[in-house]
Length: 313
Image 1 (tube, rainbow, N blue to C red):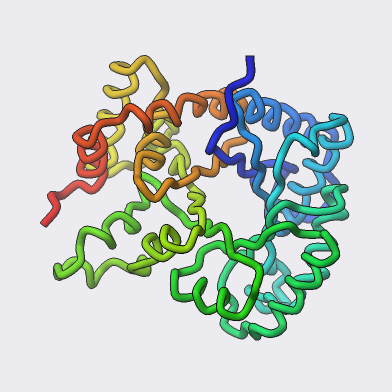
Image 2 (tube, helix red, strand yellow):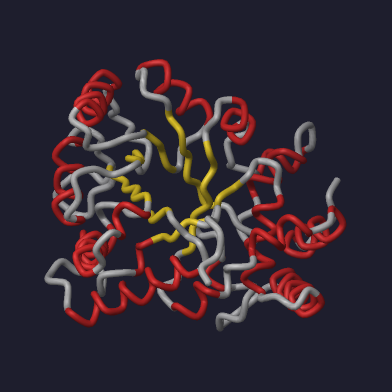
């Protein structure tokens, strides 16, 4: 029986084949279908894309699965991103061609609209009026239903929000048990160690205060704490992995559920993005919300301190 709707998001970056331009193969479409089915089986209803993933092949593969599965589009939400360019002859960050980029995504996905458009990265040459006009045109045409951002600070979101009447509803950041700078920024205030932390302080607070949902990319840390092989690991990573395993065994759950539950336990209500294309590993994440709800303060801090590898001030 399918799970109830989940706060987990399925990230489609691993779908579509290799990282080269070209045609999506039948095998890649079959792989995408299996991954999507696994995500649906644990209650996932939000699917995350970007126009650059696999040079557009991720969106194409997903679109082919939608064609195979009547009624699926009406059961899910699709979000995609634009603002990064992979072609070497252009600037790497570019928010000057939003309308064309969204039209290309819609064509690859084979849909009339996406539920949320995310601006993928800050563009240092951003012209606010240009972005506002493009977003307004897309929204008025029914091609996007909501606006979000990715990899932006609270100050950058506030700057954009002053310019556009469309609410910014999502900010997607790298957040995990491995990438803990977002936590450290809140506990190292008025401490010298804060000078080494590059996470923009106040971003979590801005999002919480302004109704901006936080999504965590890289949430599973590429499996570093859940059994994926790595050539080298630090002592802290080994200690955290051992604690994850101990908690998973004690709670009769998976290591993935513990790692994601740690993120979801935080009061910022972080929604993890699952990046794996392995159906078994995707299904292993299904217990994350329960683990978040039952994780104690002591368990949360034990995981944080083990991964951090040094005491808090």
